[in-house]
Length: 411
Image (tube, rainbow, N blue to C red; front, top):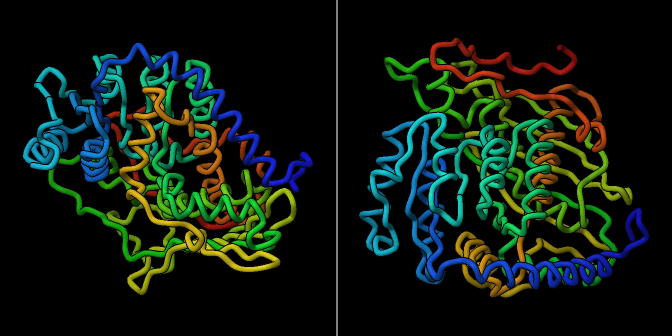
């Protein structure tokens, strides 16, 4: 039972009722959509290209990619070529030159184009402003995770999600485990008491070294940061925010909401202090506490050693890995897009995952905040924080030095 006196089983029933009501509203609105949903992609790197291919999977009928946007022309061209020359999806790609947008304002021109769905697969620092523009334009949303890199960004993303819901826009986030049939079935059974009362949780997201790029001749500081975005806090958020958010989202799912506090630690213990590795730490360990007092342990790292990922839920009557009580279905990276298009057409449950991905993003962000400062961070403190780590102005002619690398206890 949570702070409001609602059991997890009650919460699931309330959520189902709310989803049905919202679905009924969407069905009426969806009648105005065309048979073929037109898709625009913001962010044409590897993630954007891969997600576009998943969107166009043959099991997701009547969708077509018609527009691309990126800050850099070479990345846009690479994505366009990959889509147009992929035999599995080429028949569902219809991109003309007039719908290829390049530059810092490319996202704005794409959302104003004739598209029904906007996929935001750009680096995470962009997502708050992109979400605001997408919602303002009245377009349906797929937003990769995380949706921000700092508290101010989370606040903006949360406001955009609420406005999207008011407008009846469908919104699916890139934490695709929420669309994995094994996890859906298993967590439903956990909520129904299959392993008794949950008493402890753990999640791991430990991988090998992150990709990074050497600086090329002629690249300004800003261009290098953007092309090497994964290793900078302000562009990517760090390991715990950009990647470990998957497992943290599952923990919040099991617990029906975010934690009330976190006490974190970590270090930059392997990555050398070189420009190509930015200012991120390479490992985090965090102890989260949920409103009912349940403790959750999180570990994430980027080391050149063995990796491990997954979740573990300990109950009074058993243990679950969040997948062991469900049957496999369509891969979640495709199912998420089927669910999005069905939501838009009113042919399935209504999805607006904006609020919960904003909360899961904050779960990750507050872990980094705690580790970097060496202080216990409360949820309410994080949600009310005015911390913004994204530069106010982005200009290719300005200098953007790397770092400094965080040292707990120092400003």
